[in-house]
Image 1 (cartoon, rainbow over the protein chains, first blue to last red):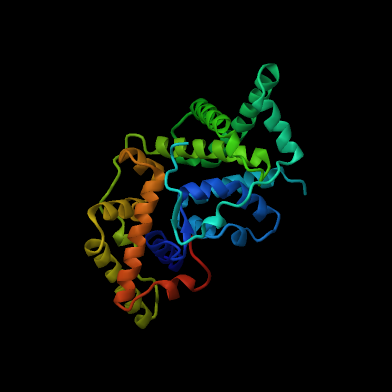
Image 2 (cartoon, chains in turn blue, yellow):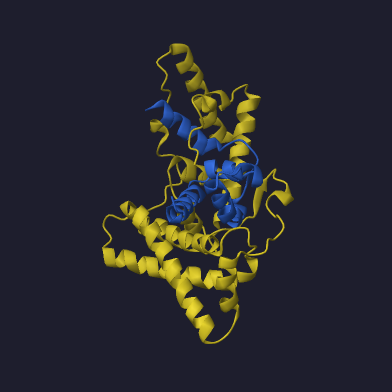
Length: 77
Length: 235
């Protein structure tokens, strides 16, 4: 087992250990968060607790990554 | 959009997730105005919206198709169409929820991505038993070559296993084990347990908090290990 795998296992079991939003609030804010992220703005400051949720919730993280890549792929340059 | 249930887990100021509405941009207004009308203009806008959602659903299916190696391309495209159809219903029902804080297209895409992702996860677990008992402990072990460090990690893992056995309620334990140890997707477990994704995540969050408290009470904590070399599992 790689060290990274041990860390990943602990994150899955224990989460980020920080205040976080739930799945519903994550979904509600995801579009704003992704656009701020892609614009290079401080998305984490604008939407506190969302990054910690993405660490602890693989499903929301997958949906964040998909939206980021879909929208990011449409942006010029 | 029934897959998501609980609004907020813990510790975040209400204003952090409910900022004031913005005036929609010109692009967004070009979507919203015909969708709120009646007649041919609305029909045309709904058709354009469906095409947009289908594009997003196909994007998600394409990304995740490795989850379903045995499913034929036509069936995957049917799944993308179903996701786009369901997302269209959700978007049209929630037009008044759009606050103009992103482009309308970004807001709409997330519905299609969610619907497609949930359908893919559920299809990939169709007919499979959902394991609620630990199957993967053998895969979680110390990795350090240094004996002292190895002993610390082993002690932490042993304390964690004990806390899972003794500190959690049976429901918390089953949910934590299924999601965090056995890798069951949260949407799949929600469907099998007839609950919502948000409710399950709340249970998972409460279980994690309990485990962290138990570890801290034993003088143990994972933070030093987790912070080493950057965060693990970040998006």
